[in-house]
Length: 343
Image (cartoon, rainbow, N blue to C red):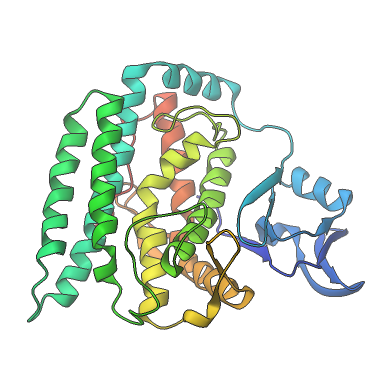
């Protein structure tokens, strides 16, 4: 099993990344502020405009360390990668499966069913915690609806019907999300999912954490030799990591949504950490973004019993475990893809 290393998040816009032997060095105003051996890093994510030396880019490519550049607010810009790794036969089979409509739908069904199951678990967990002496008919109704939609997903054979059912389920889930927010209700509320740009504090946090999750899943897929741009649920589009988006579905509720709710309900973030922009969107301040990144890193260190592998692994290794299982399924080593479902 892959060792869980650190993802280095660089949030100071004036930083410059350089190489010193086998070390990644961060400099600010020509002074060294931080250094870490490359063998302790699995990825580097840079927020805002900053420079990186060609020598560092070469080191990252050589050691298979993903180097990604994003805007200061989390929009993806570009990614530096080395030579494509992995078995070409595995990728060729992945492409053939993606071109087969029947096989694509069968895999897409698993991604969506896993997502709905994990969404339902998030609601059930909150329902149990709140239901004592409290009437929660909307949440109870959403839990029942998600169970129904999961059955519909598994019984359909149409990609269009599948996407329609997923959309209805997502609307119900996010329509109930506000009831999961138990603190700071005046400043943190959810009236539905919105993005590009997010219109409220909760959606701003969700979009940011989804972006972090995307980085993890894409890197995991590449590490096992799969093409992250060729998926089964999300259609091909230039610049879109469709398979990474597919696999993200099963992780969103468990890794992202629960983290955002925890940060709000434990008052680790507050209204002062958000600001509006000219486009009418909501952005996080540098301090709040760092708070979220710290919580994300801590979450990745927690241990979980993997439901299929039946072994204890770090939460941060879940994308790599699922990517490995996907590669095994595509190669024909296992009969089906065991989507991650949290009970």
